[in-house]
Image (tube, rainbow, N blue to C red; front, side):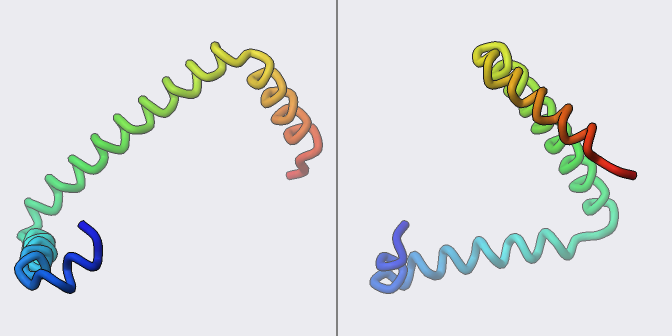
Length: 83
């Protein structure tokens, strides 16, 4: 929905405000809900990281020259890094 629609249609603006308030009401739930949402966030993050790693592996397989160049750059970075 474009911003112009919100200016022209007050009902659309009210729907958007109601969605925002629902998020606030969910955030003020008890501690148990917060822990469940935290666990759900960790599960979603783990899933995202797994998919990201899989996508990087796929990219490395289909673009071997670029992957080799990236490995070489990483090796140079590690050689010149000082602790």
